[in-house]
Image (cartoon, rainbow, N blue to C red; front, side, top):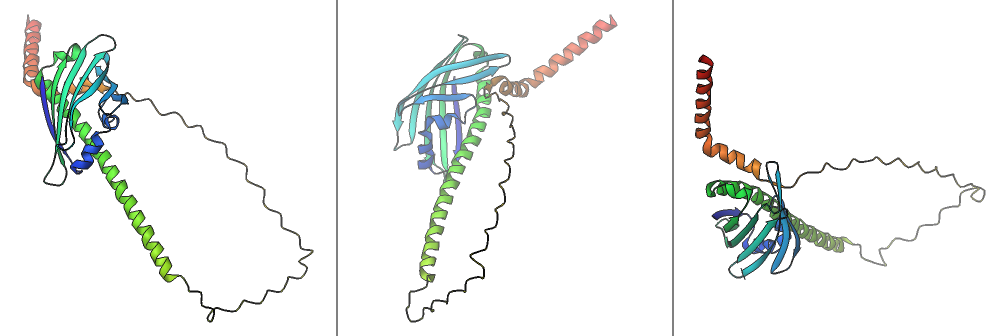
Length: 260
């Protein structure tokens, strides 16, 4: 099935393109995805998917079959297989970037998806809606990463400029070594009486170290892609009329049986 998505991020196209070259960092924004190794042309990893009580783990790899830096476009061919043999997944993803009118980057993603097993029971319409929802989470994470990296770069530049300004100001206000206007050395202060017999005051004993608090370990969170939770709202939105009609029919049958 063919899926199409388009989104915009607020960073310039060159910066966005450079960020997408770090495939491991980009994968961290997609629920359930982990990249275990990556080179300039290939990568490998896994995707954890939950479908109700069924947990799937797709282990696979991907290859950049095309990469055009001047046009800001690349094509990835990825394949994976569930480690328990419950299905396979393959995707050919074409991603293209271009500058937006606002100074950000418009990103177009076209996916040719082929899946077998349990997730294959959903049609194209449901998968498009679910992928739209997941893409919203991905874009929100990506915008946060790109925004934080841009803010840190601005802070570093501002700090460097401030340091240079302070150095220039210090050089201008430093006193000149003028022998004529320099003050005479002050007379030495008289020695205190009984200095030789004065005893050195005792220093206070160091405070006893406080016992360290045992911090409980953080609760383990399931980072799997919960496909069931994403699908159910879509199904409810798409088929609520059919569901309501079925409930009415059931209610009528129950009422008729009670009368009988």
